[in-house]
Image (tube, rainbow, N blue to C red; front, side, top):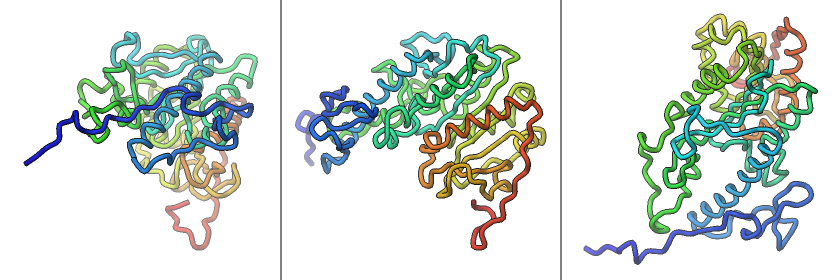
Length: 356
């Protein structure tokens, strides 16, 4: 039986982590385009080799993440490491918080999908439309411009839950898969559940719990009101956690908005939270209908349901609907006794009652 030594196998592929060397630039419309052909978007299919595609895409995403985080921090957000007070070279998950977090009387917190990295909403939107529209940049700008005394902001990070010891950084599953390998045909590194997980932030559920208990619980004014935005599995987990700990949050949480697909799996076992959710919760879901169109779905979601103006991808809900979400949160803020009118939209004749 014969076997090939690793030294005889092709080396793993490498791509530079800067736009110019990748052949791209940011144009005047905040779009990433080809230097050689300024109308061309990022060209993914440069090879039939899947490892080549993976490595080139990750290099582009590294450039995007650096640009997004640079702008967010330049506009007033700062990195906060979780668990709190963790040294930079020890396992931690970074989140973003505004400088007024300790003193603000209102806090808006965003829990995104586990498939996305910090500050990123949708790479597909960044690639086609603009960096600001596919990330938290536009959201941050809208919040900061909403008032002379804007609320504090927390951008959670359920996606980067794997600790990469070699780079002393938290990474997403996609980045982990794209880390350098011994050869181009080697398998990705195995995740050690002890060495490669961040304490108390090992998954979406534990991260959501830590952010609520420790960040909101200890880094904010105890009287500050809280508005929560959740998307995808981040939305599911924050609603589950609020149900469990509602006695701790019922006097602080003002409104909760979720972005979801057609399916909502939460069962409401806490009657007090269920009543709150029916009055102050709102869901924006995938739909071909125009943004903000009322939809049938209150029976399934337990709150009023609206079209997100996006028919296909949950990750695109925030880029499409963030202005409407913020408008709703402000509506609740301006009306202390706000309670949504229960909205029942008759289902289409050929629609299943359990599906929007």
